[in-house]
Amino acid sequence: MSTSTALKVLSNHTLRWSSPTEFNDPFDVPRELAYDISPSEIKAAICRLLIKYIGNNTLDISNLTPKAQSTLNLIRSSDKETIEIIKSTLADEATSIFDLSSGLEELRAIWRGFIPEFRILCLTEVNDAASMWYHYADKYQGIVIGIACSDEFDSPWLVARPVDYPLEPPNLFTAEGWAEMIMTPQDKALEKILDAYTYTKTPDWGYEKEWRITSFKRTNEKGVTSDYKLNPKHFVNIFFGPLIDQTIRQRILSFVLGEMPYIQLYDVGFGLNRKFTFKQIKEG
Image 1 (tube, rainbow, N blue to C red):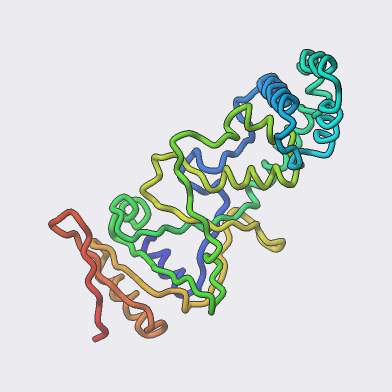
Image 2: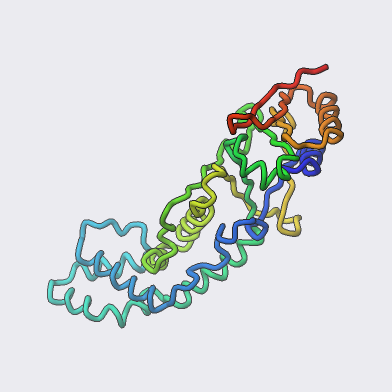
């Protein structure tokens, strides 16, 4: 982070949780569900999925909606001739069985309301990525703060999850994925959507080695960011950037030594081996 942000974080004992609307990756946490996928494509995918379930009685359907389960169980109990007739008419019946248009639009409306209310804390497992120092730490003029995962202080990041950077996008970016969602109970569908959209990013961002924790805006809050308090003992390391202004460095150094002397301090430099160097600062 920049030094100005760092001073706020250290003095206020807070970290910022943000709505996805504030992220710099335009493809992070999609703002619209099933974007650029037409209802007819999803309808066709539902038909293919139904035929798959009908043709294989061993496939588990317990995670589908009650209506889908009862419909499939009824079809599965029919004779072969009836099943073949049903298969041939599925294209006409799929929409009425699963209420495609209203179900999809309802999920879309809920998601649009989620986005501004959503709160994500973004962390990284590395302190030596040049791209991270450049983009997030004010072009090497800022700092990195190390935080502890502590059961004693009930650290919220103990439940953090790593972000995945798959070569192929999640199934929810396809008509087949949405066919499955339409046939899934709404609460479980939203859970799957949150999981797929929140904890995956494109491979371009893999260098960040990001971890995330999610929450929602509290009732008394406004805006799209929230600064939440934490026990200052969570701060365990501070790394001063190679190009930090020395006056600001001294200001932060003096503050930390006076208020949080337990924090370990390091100066970061540019090594001739194309790696960062880390030199611990001894008090005095």
